[in-house]
Length: 212
Image (cartoon, rainbow, N blue to C red):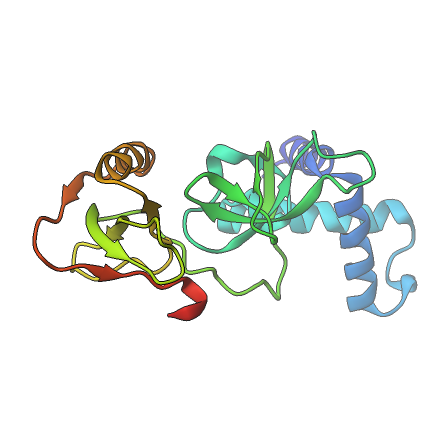
């Protein structure tokens, strides 16, 4: 790599890095070296950081490993956590927060659906995965009853391809077959799953998640 190419790569690495992330990396490098005397100037320290960024980018090809914010379209699939940037959040709250995927898109630690515009890698140690996964199988409408919910007549639940109940998605409750059909149609459209009506004499007792 010639000098001009190296300079352009270092400049690109520095300009793409948020100030807060650059400060964090400076502290990390200083902590590793345990003394400032290893570098003759702040400029030399920043150059060393940029060289590490360029080398890391060439080795992995993943800017997200450097903590550089990226468009949400590139966010990882699965049930892990990311740092999500939400510019429209209230002024007294930080725009960056933990987020994970859900059926509605993204949610925060408290379960509220959010609409982030950028993301960055969540540093270790990360929160435990939620167990969420892309919906599979079908929606099933079945008759149900509950001592605590006298109006309950039907449940709509997600059944996975192996026939087991998807316990990460709480069943929808309905007060009539028509109500169940309408709820199932809307839920099925959102999840991209077909709807099947269970037509037999079995009646399923409903239990809330905390009673299961």
